[in-house]
Image (cartoon, rainbow, N blue to C red; front, side, top):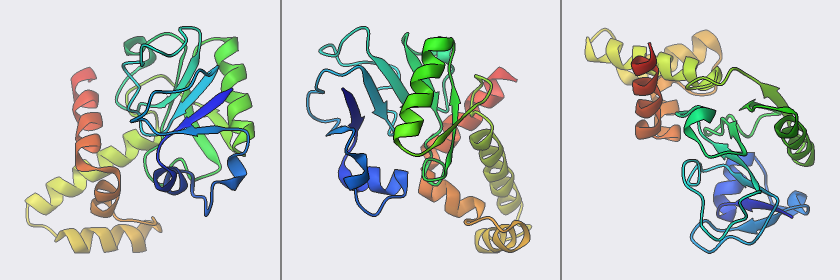
Amino acid sequence: MRVLIGEADFLKKRLGLEDLSTLEAWQLSNADQPLPPATVYLDLSGCFAKYRPSNTSSDAWWIVHAPAYTLNELPPQTIRLNAWPGFAAGPDWEMAWEGEKAKQIATEICSLLNKNPIRVPDQIGFVGARILASIIQEAVMLSDEGAASKTDIDLAMKLGTNYPRGPFEWAEAIGWEDVREVVERMRDEG
């Protein structure tokens, strides 16, 4: 069995779905309730990245949103995923895994969700979140220097690069704390 963890509205937003009827192969489970037994858990919120509920099977696989960690920092049988808002809704998923079994599970799960797994290096921030966090950090410094307003920076990025959001809009959608965590972890490893 496969369990997709999260509330319906959250899952719709993260996956870019109008309704959840396309997820027939999944049992949906709220993270606030005891999780049912499963062979694979998909946690787009990342609430179970570092710690697993004691009632879940020790041989279950976890695909978790965990841009601020590496596989070495997470429990065994984990596949990392970048599920920041806007990233998980696209057709390609940035993922990090080790071993053939993990590759097989990542491929199977992505196929069920009509996604394409893109294996990237197991580093803090993957690739996309790393770049976006750096852009947001630069935008904050530019704004703090008084060179441009937050509104002007967002507009410049949207018009100049055709981004769907400006850096401050991205940070609001992702959550400032999540962006800060990736930036700080990148700085610490550097």
